[in-house]
Image (cartoon, rainbow, N blue to C red; front, side, top):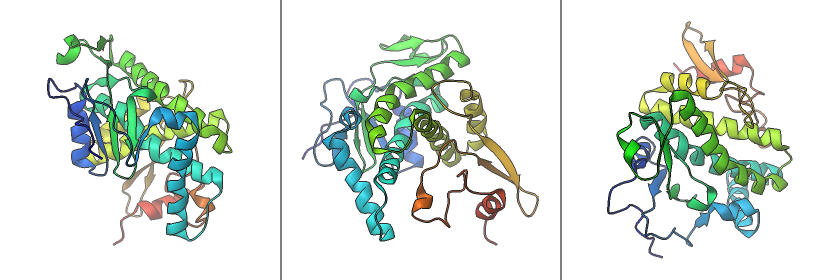
Length: 282
């Protein structure tokens, strides 16, 4: 199938430079802005995120990928709710970057409702239509069509949380019947995807410290429907070095496959084990 040209031939989207930078540092993910006259890609592994949010056949096909991967990689089948948790993570982690990376790099916050996003998980590609975005008054893009100017950094942070919630809430609703988790737990997962996605990309950008500070301001722990704070803290390594870590608001359930191999930010991982995993082998 020939995939339609995704990038506009006229003026590029104000968030396109941020997406290009994302791919420069993390080649496994590509986000491209659909031209106004381009159709969203379909077939050949592409899925409309609006279809995932309905929780029907498209979600069945999407989760079959995770089910097969678990069987192939670990030689066992995961519980259906574990498969659903893996699938949600593998979509929500890149999806949150559609909002957080333009905000972090250029102080532009796109609105990306599920109807405007398609995903190819095998390729790690996102195709997105961005009709509107929020920005600050001094942004050169403030006069462009679709720009919504907000007063200050605090207002822009509120736009980040609103944009992610607008996109992720229908996705959570679609996945929820497959998972043994209530609404609060699902929003804890969303909080983790926001934080850990940008934290990782910022590390690749050489701006980990700034990202941690920005995320602490973004998620102070009092903004509904999100659950918990950014959760960063520091441990001390064997030679007195600082080892940044965080406490997740949720668990990815990987321990159900490998109880002895929990994630370094998992609530089940004690500090001694975190220090061991975070300390480079000599």
